[in-house]
Image (cartoon, rainbow, N blue to C red; front, top):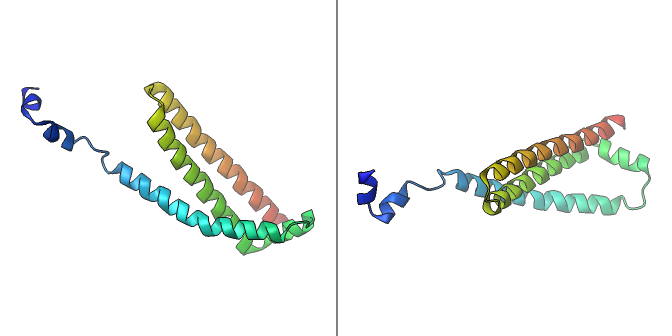
Length: 129
């Protein structure tokens, strides 16, 4: 303990960084954002193209392998990107440690469950066509 008091404030702070986790989180957030740009543009164009179509035309569209794969990639990127963003918000603004941990667990479980349900729905439609 005496050694810690003899060090300068900079010396004490040097070892207290994010343990390199922050950089990985930041890069993943940027990569998912970059992936979402073309996927979202593709999805918007597809939805515009399907405007006024009936359910059978939509199922035919989802049944195409490229459409199904791109839709699943869009879902994965969207849920993962949103989970990364919500994690930052929770970590930055929830001060109570127990509440923060609980919210992080609930948010991550909800993201996984909702993504799995959405992917299941795409696969069910794709395989039905």
